[in-house]
Length: 304
Figure 1 (tube, rainbow, N blue to C red):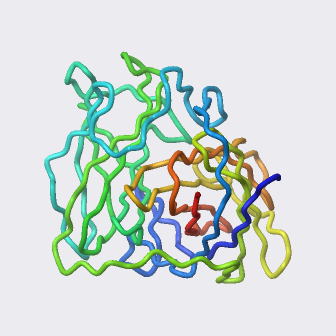
Figure 2: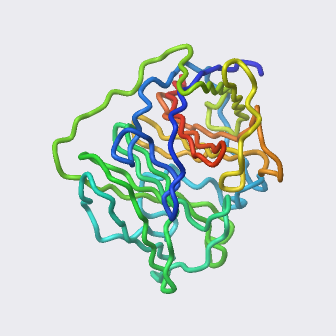
């Protein structure tokens, strides 16, 4: 792939959770990222252009434009509403919220994206903490997200969804709110660049040219002890789930799989569509499942 940047990323094992919690980086109280050996290298800047993602497998069409960077609680009249401005440290907690439509009423009709009606993420401001959970919606439209233990500091909570009806039908939205977790907050530096890092016998190689703001292909290759890994199991309708957060302002980019999971196992290579609009450092969180265990890999990618 011309102009490709190749990265090796550290795989940190994370047992799959039951219920609503689907991912928490290991080693940080069940809810934060601690894969500090992940690598980053510079990727060349691609030509500018607006993404065209309508019709991509595994995601709703976006006829009215991209979903936004997720840095606000309101977009085109849709709002993420929550009362809590703080969450407790060191213990599992529940975060309750609503998604309201332009008329102010709770949205109850959502399209399914990667097997879920709504995806919810908790990310620490220094990108050292990451959780991806799937809340439960009540009949009145209220949502409850079960979060693992959070460390003290500032966290941004993202909700990604697509209304199935109403003025936003068929569009993807990313909305977020900030919360504070009280206590002594210790900032964790973003990992430095490294050509290759491995752990638990796994190596994942990510290649592509994701910068420039246009939809670009991104390829992930899985190996173990130098041998190709083809035992990836379906997770959220695909063989891996990839989320990117910008280190400068915490802009959100959901990287979508090109193809859905089939009846058999996947790998050793997976293809994604990526759209990283801003230059600078991005933290990529890759989730995949092997033999019933959910793993999370984190990598810092620098876009010039």
